[in-house]
Image (cartoon, rainbow, N blue to C red; front, side, top):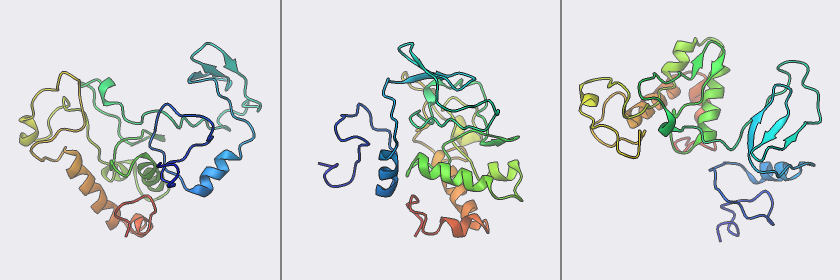
Length: 210
């Protein structure tokens, strides 16, 4: 029904998908994806070798039809991975900041409306040349695990993790490390930035874009 109403899309209407990954795209973008001349359907990719060869979970491999001898000339984009797997985090470790010395680590800087919007904001922050990594990270706050060290007295009252493991969805007293507080701080900072604020207005993926 949702597909008939244009709320959900399939790349190939003859194939029944096994998962929904919360992708966001327009009809024009969907048609562009459908125009790809080659589609490889061998299941999940387990790794990409240094020379670009794709290795699949069933042990088979595929040599891609282009030369990657020029190191760094080709980017491989994993579009189906879960972006934030809190259950596999080490509670004793400090999460990676979004920006650090030329490296970008995707983090949950806003939550809903989802990964595509957050990715666009992080990419836009990267393109503002007069910001340092520290300044970009101050605009990219994100929640850690429940078991991460408390940031203040309110966080210290949190109960231990549930038997299901760490979660970013703690519901309790608000403090500076709470996802909702961080989300609000990020939005305020984004709108106050001379380049980022106007860019957000009318952003088609932003639920507060106006």
